[in-house]
Image 1 (cartoon, rainbow, N blue to C red):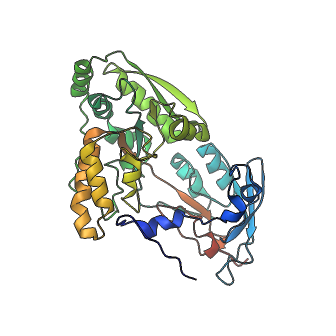
Image 2 (cartoon, rainbow, N blue to C red):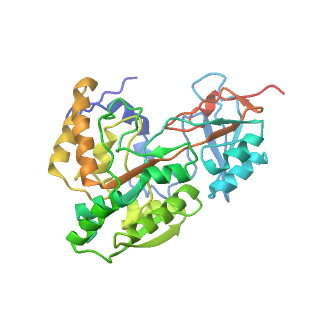
Image 3 (cartoon, helix red, strand yellow):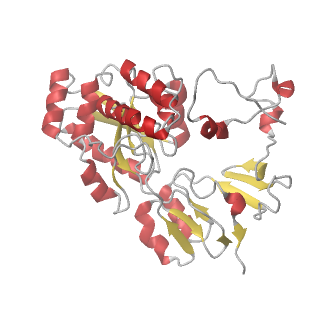
Length: 368
């Protein structure tokens, strides 16, 4: 059969974004509560694996015998285990309790290297970590306050002290390997004196601001402590809040009960048009609440520009405006250690955008 799509306007990222569209049977679902229907509680899909069970922290899937690629997947059973603490992940890998992970604490690299069975892969940098601001907030709605917070944090120093030579200071919302990245982009300069002046001029010295991040993510916890110390010097009191990752995501995307969040809900890796979703004033995914008419117009233009060479200067202007508005402080590139037991598996590959397991159907068990 053939599926025909008719768009209201050109969309340069259509085929890329279709990977996120999963057609569902209207006849089975129309009029039902989607969150509780049996169709989603016991899902049926066309991917390489099918759901078997979810007990505690273990999500278990088995190979889909109807998968369209003959002979795949070769790995018949997969368990995805939730381990919230990145250092615990290091120990689980080192002790052969799990076979692979995208998220072990980079500080544990020496311990991981002691286990010769492990293959450690450092992927290219993706979207930066930093601070995501609620621009609806009385204080954070002032652009100069957001700029001051960025200027007060010495990202080069943080990278040198905390990222173990594996990461570096961040620069803008688009990953450095992207075709749309602007190599002439300048970082926000570290200047605590100027930052203090901006805070004084805005009349917000002494303000208390809540900074949230997910407990167990050692690098983000270190970044929170680093920021708290830096902002004290410019007259901002950081109220630190540690929470589990799911609660942090919910606070930003559903409740918008946040002031500053460590969630990196801004920045793009393979497809720059995702900036439209993140920062266009009409987008439901613009959780930070940024409103900038010039930026809206450029995002609309970029999304409708099919030729990459034509789109490059448009994205350069978009990056310039986002860096000036600072809806997020793109502070540092988080180093990842994609780790897998190479004695057990072959055919694995690492992706900066998707990690180790996106192509799990291509893995095979290594010969004993």
